[in-house]
Image 1 (cartoon, rainbow, N blue to C red):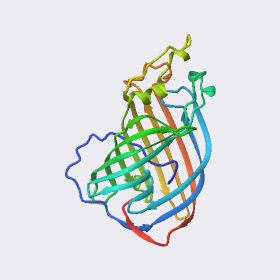
Image 2 (tube, rainbow, N blue to C red):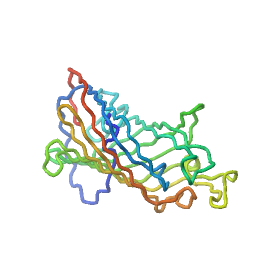
Image 3 (cartoon, helix red, strand yellow):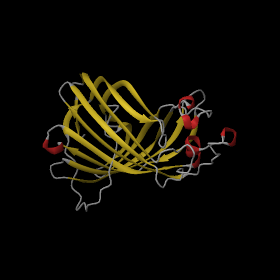
Length: 280
């Protein structure tokens, strides 16, 4: 799957009208494989005042199996599919953060890399007659596990989003725009991992803080991409907003808004001779 892909969102306020029929399917390769390079700039964590930039490889892998799927939405297992609802097993991951390089967390334990997985329900709300516009409601529930030394469960995340996909942006064939937005909810254990300060790590400038569970702010992501015959190009911008979040008073939250961005390009190496019907 493209590393820098359109997994982000906006709120839709207009009346959708009557639900249309299912999206049109076309024959596409069962799998596609590519490799490239990208640049990304990210905050250490939502609420951090520090930003880091990375140059990294961009793997491009698409797999259109009946159950296992790898596409712009990530790696997932399709458990149920109807014209209106999909049920998937979704996966995710996050990188580590070294507290020695983050001023707000100086002297505290590092944030370990994590993997997350759990069920996700997708409701296909509406699409245009020509299938250029699609609006979905996605509701994933994931357990989060750190993966260094002895793996342990560190909490739960619920991240419902409205997702709008636009095919042929501004009348330009092949260009795809993805916009999604929604709230983030986390339990107390997850928030204490990222935003809690135990008494042993309190300092004159960093008070002890017990993070509660609940609303963790919201995200807005906009992504643009195009697949050419031999290569793929894409980029994204994401806004994290912690105004009104239950962790907003944590001394580790030094900014209420963060901006992330990235761009990548990947060259196609090979693809399957076998084709399958796909509406992606």
